[in-house]
Image (cartoon, rainbow, N blue to C red):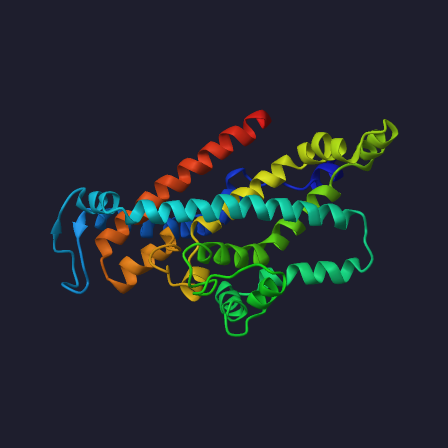
Length: 300
């Protein structure tokens, strides 16, 4: 008995795991908190680097009033919400369809998975240049395909028309990130116990009923997590807009992410860019909070 007690492993104190991960937590919090606090402080100051290397004076809510009263914030917000909501919905729908095909073990499964993951490994800037050439009205692949199908194109080109430019940016994002949804949802579908699927088949459930009443409810948590991740990423869309349209024509494709770049790094209006940063933080956190509340309340 004494020998058994001697060889019993000693339990570490409960605080040891927290102590070991505390440096990473402290570093992560610092990297997140410092930029936000820096932006919060300077959002109440008039600070334009073209005029002074330091803030020139406290103006209270002046930067926020300028952002909200100028109209450019709400225009950029509308474009951002359009890209975010429509893009997330389309990418989820297409990703789920691809995942359902992969579950049926189509021929060439290994090659299919490799091809699916490739677009997500490409930098968004590179994707932007790729689609910029594909949208070229003088010989791009996409205008040629649309013309061959009898679909009329605007005289200014796809990226030059305010009616098609935003959708062109969105199409490039859908091409790159739909495989991300497909891979994650495919993993979620594989985690469903086969006994449940077999029982549904024995009960002669239709494929649609099996999808809506069994598969989607069982992968709902995974689906909501990936939806929220892509929602936050799309809300900060910048790279594709910079390469494809630079916010034009006019302001038809200007998103909040691109507006921050324009006002902060081009116009050097640090105070206004800081105020817009916090407006973005408030909007996206409010939307995510609503998604979390309605999506996960049944898991409490």
